[in-house]
Image (cartoon, rainbow, N blue to C red; front, side, top):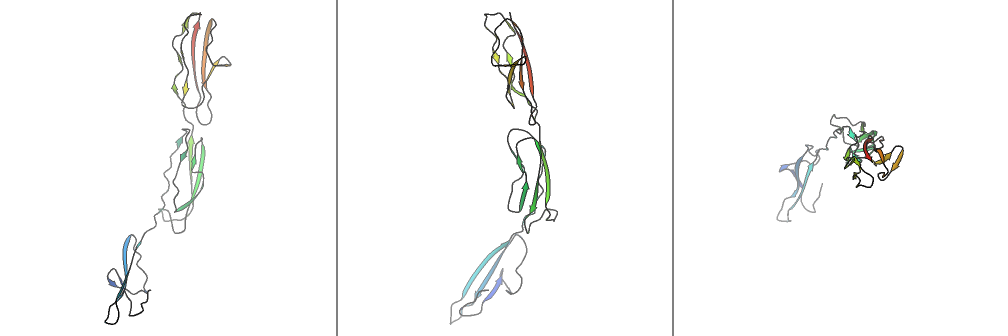
Length: 205
Protein backbone atom coordinates (compact mmCIF):
# COMPACT_ATOMS: atom_id res chain seq x y z
CA UNK A 1 0.00 0.00 0.00
CA UNK A 2 1.22 3.49 -0.78
CA UNK A 3 2.18 6.05 1.89
CA UNK A 4 2.12 9.82 1.55
CA UNK A 5 4.49 12.41 2.95
CA UNK A 6 1.50 14.11 4.52
CA UNK A 7 -1.93 12.79 5.38
CA UNK A 8 -3.75 9.50 5.67
CA UNK A 9 -4.16 7.29 2.61
CA UNK A 10 -7.70 6.09 2.03
CA UNK A 11 -8.55 3.29 -0.35
CA UNK A 12 -11.65 2.71 -2.46
CA UNK A 13 -12.56 -0.19 -4.73
CA UNK A 14 -15.00 0.72 -7.48
CA UNK A 15 -16.04 3.80 -5.51
CA UNK A 16 -16.58 2.02 -2.19
CA UNK A 17 -14.37 2.24 0.89
CA UNK A 18 -12.00 -0.71 0.92
CA UNK A 19 -9.76 -2.25 3.59
CA UNK A 20 -6.48 -2.96 1.89
CA UNK A 21 -5.87 -5.84 4.32
CA UNK A 22 -8.81 -7.76 2.82
CA UNK A 23 -8.26 -10.13 -0.14
CA UNK A 24 -8.68 -8.62 -3.56
CA UNK A 25 -11.83 -9.61 -5.48
CA UNK A 26 -11.66 -12.83 -7.49
CA UNK A 27 -14.52 -12.60 -9.98
CA UNK A 28 -13.26 -13.48 -13.44
CA UNK A 29 -13.49 -11.29 -16.54
CA UNK A 30 -14.40 -8.11 -14.68
CA UNK A 31 -12.68 -4.72 -14.59
CA UNK A 32 -11.80 -3.25 -11.18
CA UNK A 33 -10.63 0.20 -10.15
CA UNK A 34 -8.58 0.61 -6.97
CA UNK A 35 -7.98 4.21 -5.81
CA UNK A 36 -5.53 5.54 -3.22
CA UNK A 37 -6.62 8.96 -1.97
CA UNK A 38 -5.17 11.59 0.34
CA UNK A 39 -7.67 14.37 1.01
CA UNK A 40 -6.51 17.94 0.53
CA UNK A 41 -6.24 20.18 3.60
CA UNK A 42 -5.19 23.81 4.13
CA UNK A 43 -1.70 22.50 4.91
CA UNK A 44 -1.02 20.23 1.92
CA UNK A 45 -2.34 19.22 -1.47
CA UNK A 46 -4.36 16.06 -1.92
CA UNK A 47 -3.21 12.98 -3.82
CA UNK A 48 -5.10 10.54 -6.01
CA UNK A 49 -3.65 7.41 -7.60
CA UNK A 50 -5.70 4.83 -9.53
CA UNK A 51 -4.90 1.23 -10.41
CA UNK A 52 -7.18 -0.48 -12.93
CA UNK A 53 -7.03 -4.27 -13.30
CA UNK A 54 -8.93 -7.24 -14.64
CA UNK A 55 -8.92 -10.85 -13.45
CA UNK A 56 -9.00 -13.14 -16.46
CA UNK A 57 -10.07 -16.74 -16.18
CA UNK A 58 -7.56 -19.15 -17.63
CA UNK A 59 -9.10 -21.02 -20.58
CA UNK A 60 -9.85 -24.71 -20.28
CA UNK A 61 -8.07 -27.05 -22.68
CA UNK A 62 -10.35 -28.82 -25.15
CA UNK A 63 -9.48 -32.25 -26.50
CA UNK A 64 -8.44 -32.02 -30.17
CA UNK A 65 -10.98 -33.18 -32.75
CA UNK A 66 -9.01 -35.82 -34.65
CA UNK A 67 -10.17 -37.63 -37.79
CA UNK A 68 -8.35 -40.13 -40.00
CA UNK A 69 -6.41 -38.56 -42.85
CA UNK A 70 -5.64 -39.79 -46.35
CA UNK A 71 -2.22 -39.40 -47.94
CA UNK A 72 -1.92 -36.29 -50.14
CA UNK A 73 1.84 -35.82 -50.38
CA UNK A 74 1.58 -32.78 -48.09
CA UNK A 75 2.04 -32.74 -44.32
CA UNK A 76 -0.91 -32.76 -41.95
CA UNK A 77 -0.69 -30.55 -38.85
CA UNK A 78 -3.04 -32.00 -36.23
CA UNK A 79 -3.02 -29.36 -33.47
CA UNK A 80 -1.84 -25.83 -32.79
CA UNK A 81 0.36 -25.60 -29.73
CA UNK A 82 -0.23 -22.69 -27.34
CA UNK A 83 1.01 -21.66 -23.90
CA UNK A 84 -1.58 -23.68 -21.93
CA UNK A 85 0.01 -27.11 -22.45
CA UNK A 86 3.08 -29.01 -23.61
CA UNK A 87 3.14 -31.70 -26.30
CA UNK A 88 5.31 -34.73 -26.88
CA UNK A 89 5.03 -37.18 -29.75
CA UNK A 90 4.04 -36.65 -33.39
CA UNK A 91 1.59 -33.87 -34.24
CA UNK A 92 2.42 -33.57 -37.94
CA UNK A 93 3.35 -36.09 -40.64
CA UNK A 94 3.17 -36.69 -44.39
CA UNK A 95 3.46 -40.43 -44.92
CA UNK A 96 0.99 -43.23 -44.22
CA UNK A 97 1.26 -44.52 -40.66
CA UNK A 98 -0.12 -44.59 -37.13
CA UNK A 99 0.90 -41.72 -34.88
CA UNK A 100 0.30 -40.51 -31.34
CA UNK A 101 1.02 -37.53 -29.14
CA UNK A 102 0.56 -36.62 -25.48
CA UNK A 103 -0.74 -33.31 -24.11
CA UNK A 104 0.17 -32.23 -20.57
CA UNK A 105 -1.56 -29.13 -19.12
CA UNK A 106 0.77 -26.53 -17.69
CA UNK A 107 0.49 -25.49 -14.04
CA UNK A 108 -2.83 -23.77 -13.39
CA UNK A 109 -4.53 -25.11 -16.51
CA UNK A 110 -6.90 -28.03 -16.87
CA UNK A 111 -9.10 -29.87 -19.32
CA UNK A 112 -12.76 -29.07 -19.82
CA UNK A 113 -13.50 -32.11 -17.61
CA UNK A 114 -11.71 -30.29 -14.74
CA UNK A 115 -8.72 -32.66 -14.67
CA UNK A 116 -5.09 -31.76 -15.23
CA UNK A 117 -3.74 -35.20 -16.19
CA UNK A 118 -1.75 -35.88 -19.35
CA UNK A 119 -3.74 -37.41 -22.20
CA UNK A 120 -2.55 -39.37 -25.22
CA UNK A 121 -4.25 -39.15 -28.62
CA UNK A 122 -3.86 -41.42 -31.64
CA UNK A 123 -4.22 -40.50 -35.30
CA UNK A 124 -3.32 -42.00 -38.65
CA UNK A 125 -2.77 -41.33 -42.33
CA UNK A 126 -4.18 -43.98 -44.67
CA UNK A 127 -3.18 -45.00 -48.19
CA UNK A 128 -4.54 -42.92 -51.07
CA UNK A 129 -6.23 -44.42 -54.11
CA UNK A 130 -4.21 -43.35 -57.11
CA UNK A 131 -5.76 -42.10 -60.35
CA UNK A 132 -4.81 -40.88 -63.79
CA UNK A 133 -4.78 -37.11 -64.16
CA UNK A 134 -3.94 -37.63 -67.83
CA UNK A 135 -4.94 -41.06 -69.12
CA UNK A 136 -2.51 -42.71 -71.57
CA UNK A 137 -3.92 -43.10 -75.11
CA UNK A 138 -2.96 -43.25 -78.76
CA UNK A 139 -4.66 -41.37 -81.57
CA UNK A 140 -5.15 -44.47 -83.76
CA UNK A 141 -4.75 -48.19 -83.23
CA UNK A 142 -3.47 -49.21 -86.70
CA UNK A 143 -1.20 -47.75 -89.36
CA UNK A 144 1.09 -48.97 -92.15
CA UNK A 145 4.85 -48.93 -91.90
CA UNK A 146 6.07 -45.69 -93.37
CA UNK A 147 2.71 -44.01 -92.78
CA UNK A 148 2.10 -41.34 -90.21
CA UNK A 149 2.20 -43.08 -86.83
CA UNK A 150 -0.37 -42.74 -84.11
CA UNK A 151 0.22 -39.89 -81.66
CA UNK A 152 0.86 -41.06 -78.12
CA UNK A 153 -0.43 -39.23 -75.06
CA UNK A 154 1.73 -40.26 -72.14
CA UNK A 155 -0.04 -41.00 -68.87
CA UNK A 156 0.27 -38.76 -65.83
CA UNK A 157 -0.70 -40.06 -62.39
CA UNK A 158 -1.81 -38.16 -59.31
CA UNK A 159 0.98 -39.91 -57.40
CA UNK A 160 4.15 -41.55 -58.63
CA UNK A 161 6.16 -41.88 -61.82
CA UNK A 162 4.61 -43.45 -64.92
CA UNK A 163 6.74 -46.07 -66.69
CA UNK A 164 6.02 -47.29 -70.25
CA UNK A 165 6.82 -50.97 -70.84
CA UNK A 166 6.80 -53.36 -73.77
CA UNK A 167 6.81 -56.80 -72.20
CA UNK A 168 9.48 -56.66 -69.51
CA UNK A 169 11.39 -53.85 -71.18
CA UNK A 170 11.05 -50.20 -70.22
CA UNK A 171 10.76 -48.03 -73.34
CA UNK A 172 10.64 -44.30 -73.95
CA UNK A 173 9.15 -44.25 -77.47
CA UNK A 174 6.84 -46.37 -79.60
CA UNK A 175 8.22 -49.21 -81.74
CA UNK A 176 8.33 -48.71 -85.51
CA UNK A 177 8.64 -52.28 -86.84
CA UNK A 178 5.71 -54.24 -88.26
CA UNK A 179 3.79 -56.10 -85.56
CA UNK A 180 1.03 -55.99 -82.97
CA UNK A 181 2.00 -54.33 -79.70
CA UNK A 182 0.63 -54.07 -76.19
CA UNK A 183 2.20 -51.11 -74.40
CA UNK A 184 1.62 -50.99 -70.65
CA UNK A 185 1.73 -47.80 -68.61
CA UNK A 186 2.55 -48.58 -64.98
CA UNK A 187 2.80 -46.71 -61.69
CA UNK A 188 4.22 -48.82 -58.92
CA UNK A 189 2.20 -48.53 -55.72
CA UNK A 190 3.71 -48.15 -52.26
CA UNK A 191 2.57 -47.60 -48.68
CA UNK A 192 1.35 -44.10 -49.51
CA UNK A 193 -0.67 -44.75 -52.68
CA UNK A 194 -1.98 -47.59 -54.83
CA UNK A 195 -0.51 -48.54 -58.19
CA UNK A 196 -1.95 -47.94 -61.66
CA UNK A 197 -1.80 -49.84 -64.92
CA UNK A 198 -3.27 -49.32 -68.37
CA UNK A 199 -2.51 -51.19 -71.60
CA UNK A 200 -2.77 -49.73 -75.12
CA UNK A 201 -2.84 -52.03 -78.15
CA UNK A 202 -1.94 -51.01 -81.69
CA UNK A 203 -0.76 -52.59 -84.93
CA UNK A 204 1.85 -51.59 -87.48
CA UNK A 205 1.38 -53.44 -90.77
